[in-house]
Image (tube, rainbow, N blue to C red):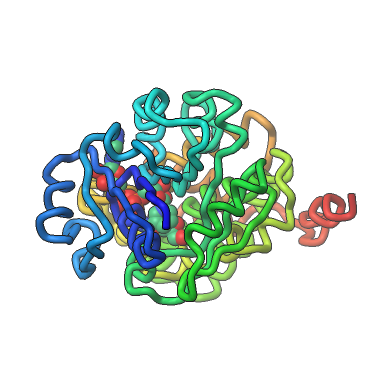
Length: 345
Ligand SMILES: NC(=O)C1=CN([C@@H]2O[C@H](COP(=O)(O)OP(=O)(O)OC[C@H]3O[C@@H](n4cnc5c(N)ncnc54)[C@H](O)[C@@H]3O)[C@@H](O)[C@H]2O)C=CC1
Ligand SMILES: O=C(CO)COP(=O)(O)O
């Protein structure tokens, strides 16, 4: 079996480390906090992020990145989007060409509007960048940690690398598909967090299932509209990393984005919500990034726009709902036509 380094010991890094350990790999779980690495080694727990999980003896905590990545066959980066560049800068001089590089983060960078693999490529160079694998899909850490059935997708410009990642993770509780559309997989994974914030707000306001179904469906349309413009394959949005992740994040109380939205809908202010969450809520920064990007490349994204105004200009949630409901008349088929056109090509 292989040695694998997992960089990032939050909830998702820890859950994925457990999947790897179940597959009998030797897992080095790196944290930038020494006390956390110590807790993993001394108590085989990571109480802050997954309080009910007893970690396998196959998982060792590391706070020294150099030691964590030495001689491993694969490196998995699982930190929030805002820490990706920092981690890659440290990693650049420590990794070797033969190591498989996977990331499992979901976000778009506000300043540059870049996807995670693009940010990593900036830091690590094109040669390395072309081999990066993304792992995404409907997968809350809390359920993966309990070994509940979960499906994800891995994608890379280099299919061989994606298949190698599939082999590392796949087991009878954690089913891994490949998909060659890296852009679509990353866009779906990042943008569903925006819509999940909206779904949480809708629930927090006391609206029902009709409103949530509308958000999910119309949210998917605007994700696919932006994705189409970014050269994603629109069919990807019908898959696990599109509608699959949208459903789980908009409907699960495990979702940090849904929970943050729910508090906003109940009237809490953003700073207090983020402080109370204590874990990353990627949708907030991604909303800003995607709103700006949509303006730059002229893609109509009314839900994202409403959420941007709510999050960054303190617009009242009810006013945002009114704004969405009172938009001009639209023909649904015309709206979706570009998907048919794209898949015909
Ligand atoms: N939690 C989940 O169920 C899932 C999360 N994800 C994605 O995985 C990524 C990580 O999320 P979570 O693990 O949930 O976050 P988290 O909030 O549970 O943990 C974040 C971890 O990153 C570490 N960190 C923060 N800044 C750092 C830095 N500058 N350098 C090194 N480490 C740093 C923190 O100490 C913490 O261990 C996000 O992009 C999230 O969207 C994707 C799928 C599922
Ligand atoms: O990406 C996720 C599930 O697939 C996790 O979503 P949250 O960050 O909203 O918890």
